Length: 385
Image (cartoon, rainbow, N blue to C red; front, side, top):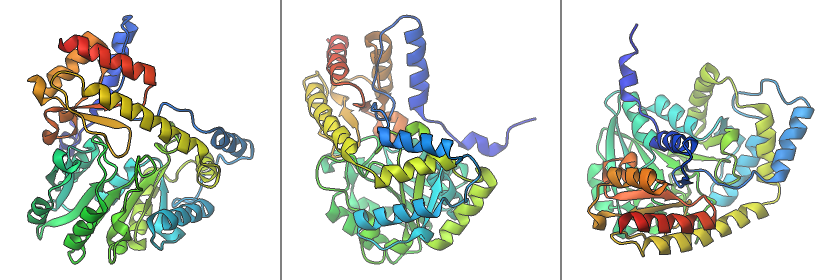
């Protein structure tokens, strides 16, 4: 037997490959500072854990509605209305096991072979992987460091064609931490509003920002009915292993996603949905504390990176990644990332793990302790000198 040809078009995340290699080195007795994996290093807030424990004790262990429990969908809709200044209801919400199914299911529902999809590059690798898997045509949109890793709007205007079926936005952005300015978002809305295409707006880092709240493209006139908002609980509430996210979209697309859910997962785990409800409706002080600590780490770590020979790193506006320009070192990204792991014991990712336009950069996750981040700077310095 052979695998189906389409399996040749699907990729993986390099972060997990690097994590495996880092763990191998640790098993050999090596010290490794983990700056490769993109997850908060904080514990899930206690009231969320207690809600899950109570749900288990109360018997929330059976199948639930494919679309998600009504009270959770109502809470999500209320949250989206409040934070995005739009009007949606529980009928527009679908609850899924993590954020990735929103990418997988909506692209599967929308993309035909030959359809073009514009996506940020460097960007979350699953975007391009899913486009290729479905026979779509990936159209990478290079991000411009001088514009805070936002789009060149003139280039975007030229890349949109009659074949464009979907535009993917991610703000705050992985891997750069960039936030698309409100003025740019308004221009983008104007470019796509009257076209026959949808926008997938990946807003999973929407609560992890260090300035004004990011603007959702769904909030502009005429855009709500053509936007898919992707959000979830993994990053905001340190719930990566709980696997619960959601999409907010037009009802006709919710129906399609529900069909794909029935055929794949049946439903999202019931007890995790009770925990998610507690997350949204309970105290938010631990989220605020986490973001404040990320800001402290960001400021110190990026300042440290800027003292390294050949490095340049702007302060990211959101998420918990530093995307350092290392072109001044004269060392290719992959080579330097490998050297830092094997020689210095600092695990990070080559910018090329996020696409061709990531060449010349390294991504560091500062979801690690302040002390480890400062130690990582000195280990990198010793490797470069």
